[in-house]
Length: 255
Image (tube, rainbow, N blue to C red):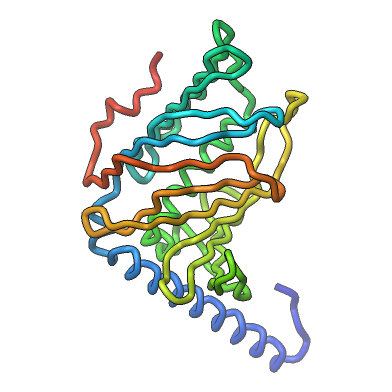
């Protein structure tokens, strides 16, 4: 923080920062209640669901189906498959603590990304998953929070909280519907492999809707992801389970 000569200026700046933090915490606490309450969110730290949708690859929409399993704070598995250019496309991402396996196959070809940028992106996905559980946001060792100006999301006002994870140097903007308190959007810088095969940064926005209660927890059933303002992926979530735990064997990174 810039060092001001006048003590009054320091006091005013500090007071403003504290007020913003208090506002952010209040927004998150309201969201926690809206999504089922702290006890429910802390109880169900694991889950599974199936997904169907479409993803844009080289300006072509590819239909896919798949499944996700997760166990906070650091276990995650995603499997997706579809047809691209007449070949079967298979994507699998597994995170188990510090171990990561990121596999992409097109027909008989292994086109798995193995760069450090790709590994960091998978790790960030795990951090984002924990942030969306909401209660970890109130752990000062994991996240620093600050309030931002309200914004419009699909024509409705949303309170905005900026979360800075301690695990990665990347901000997460979280948009909560001002009436319901539900999380309706997240925004962050993301990194993808472009059509030229090179890694590049994009502005990533994820919109959640179609909330329903599962074991007392409100969860979205529809997600839309945009990159640089253009649709990248849309999906519908079904067979949603929220669980207290999932065995570690489901997240093995061994082939």
